Image (tube, rainbow, N blue to C red; front, side, top):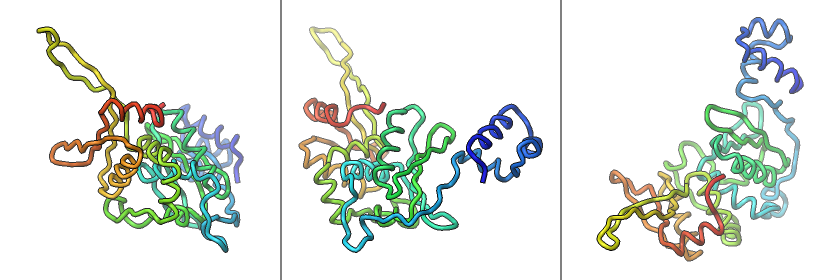
Length: 258
């Protein structure tokens, strides 16, 4: 097992244009290890028998239900769960490099929900994968399954629906932070015989899964947010919030990515 300092030194040498053979000879690390560090710098945490609220003697909600509701939205949008070849599972949430605040918020939610309390970050091309390692991700996210999310049914368990009902804005924020955006739209209109440009803010949420879009719009309905389908090229994948009062609500509780 190599410490992080050794890993960083090896990657710095590779970044200078050194060959893997040369770096391996200098650091003592194998070429395959150096290649793996290029995709994951941090050592894989040791698997601990950390108790899980969902699979204990009495199934309970995760301890921080607000963080869970936010993370559920992120997972349904840009997350995946995959098994590790030894044991346990990785939860990965993809966050664009441009949104550093979103990366921090995502990592905090993963740490609050992961029974081990840990997360790590893997830099990819144009985005960061916030990663949590645990045996219990399928307990906490029973929507996990084979294939793409839009090709299987996505239905919340009753205990998840209770959490979303208690923290609906956190759920909406997670969905927007993953598969949504706040933009400034514009149009023109005649004012006093002169055509003028008119700008207004608008929220979009885009997801191919009918079930995930329905979870989003059902939650907006409970919050009194007016929304419409925005069909493009015959695909009803976009949900728009454009009415002034509804945008004001979204601005208060969600806001643009940051």
